[in-house]
Image (cartoon, rainbow over all chains, first blue to last red; front, side, top):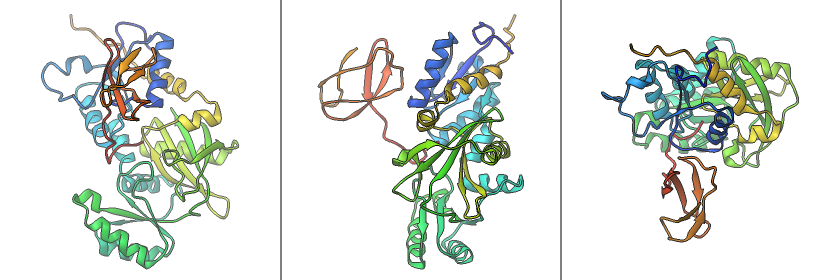
Amino acid sequence: MSDPRSASTRLGILLSTVRYEERRLLSELDRRGIPVARLDPRTMSFGPGETEELRGTTVLNREISSQRAALAGESLEAFGARTLNDAAAIRVCGNKWSTYLRLRQEGVPTPTTLLAPTPEAGRAAVAALGYPAVIKPLSASWGNRVSLITDQYAAEAVLEHCAALPSAVARTVIVQEAVRPGSPDIRGIVVDGVCVGAITRSSSDWRNNVARGATVEQHAPDEEVHRLCVRAAAAVGATIAGVDLVERADGSHTVLEVNSRVEFQGFERATGVDVAARIVEAWTAEMVEVEEPV
Amino acid sequence: MDALCVSCDGPLKIPGDSYQGEIVSCPGCATELEIQSVDPLELALAPEPEEDWGE
């Protein structure tokens, strides 16, 4: 492993907004005396003069915008940077259908999911899965526009609204089997092939996103959950991942989604696990010596 | 660090260990502000959350 404080190694962090998580990461680097270059994707055009320093830089992708995270990640790689998570994982995790396909291909248990590019396909998908079902946009976070469909009238209303949206991507949805909606779910965090812990999330809403006010507590150590989290992260190619699971009525677990730029404020509070330190360790372990031009 | 809100011009304190890019809230008018620079201290209105923001 290269010395992260050496002048011949470089760390970069891709971000625009500094949330709790980015503050923790930057503080951890400061504490260790490791310099980092800030890369703001809002202002990066990757033109002449902007890309020379990128070669050999190991960049942690913490951009809050899914679109910018994917575009900048891909661009960084093209100009010789190493990225964590890489652009392929960012793209897969940013698309719920792609995530479902990867999980399914790798044999990771995940709820039955159908693609609905049109309202007609959506109606057929809901009819096939039965009620309740869940309609999700292809790429939304924090539970936004995720709808629990309890009857035909709700299905019609949501599909009609989706059809009226202005972009083809926004009009495309997935329809997913609802697994014990309203019950707590589980969030596990994986760093470099290790599940560092898990929390249970509960909410008065049927969605358990911390961003929507869900309460969290440490999930009792559970080998099956840890194993599934690691398998799910590997299936989407993510070195760092937040894996959401839910327990079925029979006690088995199924993976709902995988997040590539995981938020961990509630997780650290509930578990006491220093996620920022674990990420910094994985990040600096990826660093390489940069050969300076003679 | 002492600063003035760019929205209401009221006073606010920015913690000394702040980072560029952090979002702070004005205690007077509740407007969210982005720290655009720490040294010298520069604040601007925080960006509105976009539909593709998240994890």
